[in-house]
Length: 68
Image (cartoon, rainbow, N blue to C red):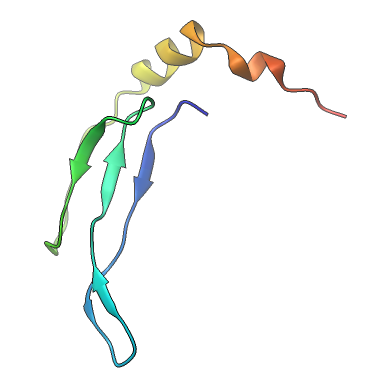
């Protein structure tokens, strides 16, 4: 949907699994805004909502949606 994507994952182990972290934020065209690697903690970044509006204005694919 040409939007920012935020994915978060835990870091560490429990009795059945190991978690590598790799939380990240990606911009509408997939460029990495924030990548946390295997670090744990509180991470912040800014999200530019104007970038979403500009991208959707340039590529108005949402106009193709047909609601039944």
